[in-house]
Image (tube, rainbow, N blue to C red; front, side):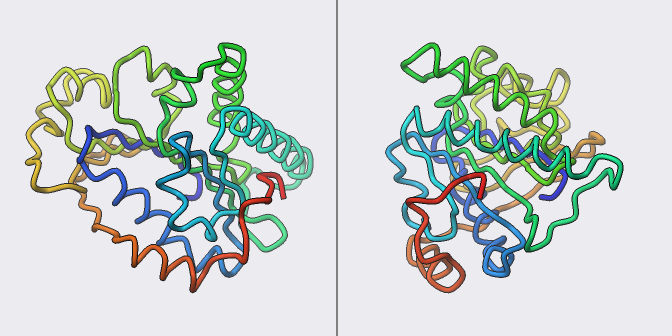
Length: 239
């Protein structure tokens, strides 16, 4: 995850939750060791993230809260940038300066579907700046998207790694992965009975078929209980 912004796209039932919790749960030991901090945005009432909420320093479930969370990450990014200038070009995670992983359960909720146009504009601008400057500073974004229409995904090119789970058509594969990729990474041919299966496209263009295991609510709760924090509801993304 370090040094990579990851976008995962898939239709309903494609297994986005498996990828989400594979990442969050996989990082849980590092969260407990205080070298990774998870920050979440879940504008669908926080339903997805609430099951493992203690793994997160901060979870934003309202539009205003999401904008404030992104702004706090920008503040942290600027602080780290000033501290690293003239010293190092790459961030090394530590207890004093952990890797921050922002997990966005539904990217369209931030970039396209916010009810307040001013908040939507502010959120999109903050997210674009984080995607542009954050990874060298130890702040990475992992976002999930169901609707791959171009107007919902204006910042696809700012993600350095893309995972295409099951999609509905060759056109959707092209929207997510780029023109000519439907034959190389035929995500539209993935069977509905194989959720979590997809194609990962790395920054260098390398294609790899991947599979994320299913995480039950019980497994998520158990992992959060073992590795999570005592409370995440009042946390700050910039802590």
